[in-house]
Length: 301
Ligand SMILES: C[S@@+](CC[C@H](N)C(=O)[O-])C[C@H]1O[C@@H](n2cnc3c(N)ncnc32)[C@H](O)[C@@H]1O
Image (cartoon, rainbow, N blue to C red; front, side, top):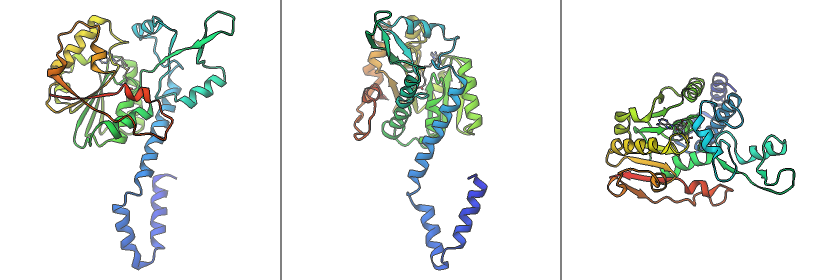
């Protein structure tokens, strides 16, 4: 039902309420938390609808021919690895693609034989579950806060932040112009432009944005997209500009892991403090706990 018809239906229903109960009912409608579940479910539906829109614009491997380095790095993995975007394709979706023969979870170790081994999977986006974990269990109330997603790609962190948080401004910075166009398409279609802004830029040109941010999200931003010298330079830039005391940095994987093997002068102990996270918040659900455990939260000292 569209908005106008839904409004008419609600008014019609209210006209049938016993006059003595009407004001109590209206008071309940203004204050109840009974609608929370309804809006939460609706937010999931909106994100799934965005994923459907994006799937129709992108190839199954969700990588663009302009991503030369990322494609080469994927091919150079020690075991055969494919990119499956976790926001666009959840486990059930992958199963159905495997059943239709459009995707495989295994590769043949001896050509022509039945000996197979599991393929490695990586995702360049957060899944719906990871987004909900971040906004519901990792970050505090973001009312009035500025959030920056470094390397916003399909924009998942921004749309999740729009729907699951009260952040005042959500900025995405993305090097790849094709992905910026896709994000703009979603922002227009779903009318997110009052709080989301995407910048087509190298994060290493966005000092003042980083200096003013209250929350910075970095999901495996550089490893697959920059060579080691560029990664070291980008991390130095981040550590010089993300300095607002008390601001929060969410990373995948940990800062220690991201920086290991890179030549930088970053002193983690004088820059950040890691805050513990509870990864057991969905005990009854069949979730990818390993993926959640890759998420780390730091407070800037
Ligand atoms: C792994 S994706 C992260 C996607 C998204 N933040 C999420 O969590 O769903 C990393 C993205 O960072 C972008 N990127 C890499 N280096 C960058 C830089 N220096 N400035 C801006 N974006 C960059 C890449 O083009 C890629 O789209």
